[in-house]
Length: 472
Ligand SMILES: NC(=O)c1ccc[n+]([C@@H]2O[C@H](COP(=O)([O-])OP(=O)(O)OC[C@H]3O[C@@H](n4cnc5c(N)ncnc54)[C@H](O)[C@@H]3O)[C@@H](O)[C@H]2O)c1
Image 1 (cartoon, rainbow, N blue to C red):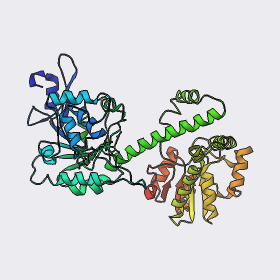
Image 2 (cartoon, rainbow, N blue to C red):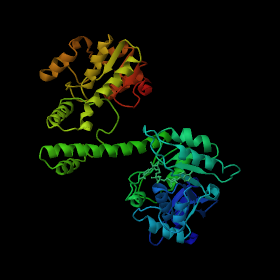
Image 3 (tube, rainbow, N blue to C red):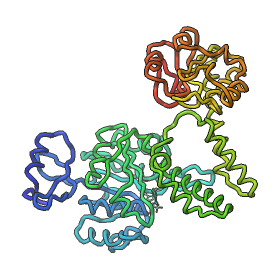
Image 4 (cartoon, helix red, strand yellow):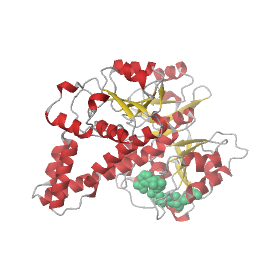
C-alpha cells in the first residue's frame, strides 16, 4: 500500500488524533477499506508483524486470516510437518477456505513458517499463543504447552528493544494468563487474553465474520492495540478485564453445550409425545423477546412465582412417567434451590441476628408471593432463630387472599409480626439488610444513604453504602 492511495480526510483524522494507535484506511475511489495499518513516526505506514505460536486449527486460521487482513504473519510450531505444510502452501489439516488463503499469502510473502522461536519473534509486535490446552482426565487443563511456549518466548526477550504484546488465544481458565503466562513474560511483554470463538468447518468465515471478539488485559493500552487488529472486521470488539475475557470463552462454550442439551431433551420429550421436536423448537425460537434474547440472562436471585416452578415440576413429572431420562431439565429446580441456599449462607456468614429484608414477592412490581424465593429465604433465616423484618413496597398483607395468602401463611405463619410498612423502620432496627429484588428508586436511595450493610442477592450490582455484594 502506498501513501498516495490514502484518503486525505483519513490523514487529517490521524493528524487530529495523534494518540490513536490504529485507523482504518479507506480507498478514495472505491471507498473500501485498505489494510489495517498502525501509524508510527508521523504518517509513515507501519504494518504490525504477528507471530502465531501453534499451527493447529486455531493457529493456522488465525495466521491465514490475519495475513488476509494485511498483516505480515510468522507461524511457529514445534511440529516440523506443520511448518513444512505451510511452507509448501498447504493447510496441515482440512478446513474449508484455509488452504487457498495460505497459498495466496505464501505467494505474496505475508505468511511464513518456522520452528524457531527466535526467528518468529525477531520482527514481531504480537505473539499469539494458540497452543493446545488439552483436558486432563479430571477435567483440569494441561497447561504444559502454554507454560513451555511462554518460557520459550521469555528466553528470547532479553535485550529486545521492540515492544511485544503476548496474546493468549488458547482457551484457558480465569487466572491462567496471570499465573502461567505473565510470570514468564511479564515485565518484558504485555499480556492480553483474546479467546478464539471459531468453529471447525466454518473457521475462516467465523474469523472474518466474528460472532464476538473479546480482549482483556491489566494493560488497557495493550487491549486496545489488540482490539485495533480487528478493526477491519464487522464486529465491535469487547474490551473487558483480563480474567473476564478468559471466563467469557468458557461461558460461551458452556452455553452452546447447554442449548444443544436443552433442545435434545425437548426433542426427546416431543418424540415420546408423538410430536415434532423441530417444530416445537423452531417455533420457540421465533420469540426473540423472551426466548432468544437477553431476557433472563443476568445473574440475580432465584426464580419463583406461580408458573416456572409449577410447570417445570409438571413437565419433569410427566417425563418420568414416560420413563424418559432428562437430566438437564431435572436439574433446573435443584439448581434454583441451591441458589437460594447460597443466599442463605451469605446471610448466615455475617452472624447478624436482626435481619432486614427488602422484597417478599417473587419479583418487583407484583404482589404474587407464590413460590417466591424471598419467602423461602426468609423461612430458612427465621428457622435459624434470627429476627426478621420485611419491607416490600408492593405487598399489603390485608389485600392478599386466596392461594397467594395460603402459600405465605404456610411458609411464614407469623408474617404479620415481621412486615413493616416502610424501609426507614427496618434501617433503624436491622444489623444488615438483604435485598432480594431490584429496589425501587426511593428505596435504593434510602439504602445508599444508610450505613447498614446490604447483601444484594438480587444481582451483582452494589446497592447501599456498605454493600456485602461481593462477599461470595
Ligand atoms: N479447535 C477449535 O475449534 C478451537 C476453537 C476455539 C478455541 N480452541 C482452543 O485453542 C487452543 C488450540 O486449539 P487447537 O485445536 O488449534 O489445538 P491443536 O492441538 O490443533 O494445535 C496446537 C498446536 O500447538 C503446537 N505447539 C505445542 N507446543 C508448542 C510450542 N511450544 N511452540 C509452538 N507450537 C507449539 C502443537 O504442535 C500443535 O500444532 C486450545 O486451547 C483450544 O481449546 C480451539
